[in-house]
Length: 111
Image (cartoon, rainbow, N blue to C red; front, side, top):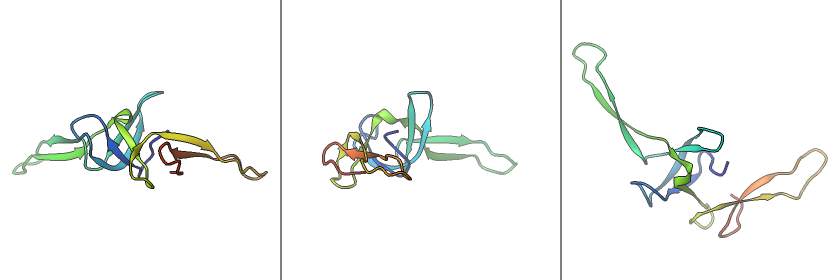
């Protein structure tokens, strides 16, 4: 998975294009499809009926799921939206196994 919870992402497609926010949730829909929820973006309304007499109905605004292909990770070091590469850490001992790390394609920093 390229995008994880608490990553900062920038939206590249849709009505909130150009805005950035923190990832609240990552959901795997199918084998090859990820959906993400971004804090304060892609907002939708949910209408609730009154449950009892003399109670008002409500409209609740919540961030909806969006496809992970519509967002790009923002590098914490250079601050730009970037693609993600992977690097396998060469340090290997008997007790630990190889570690796969995400790296920024623009500045080569470990994310």
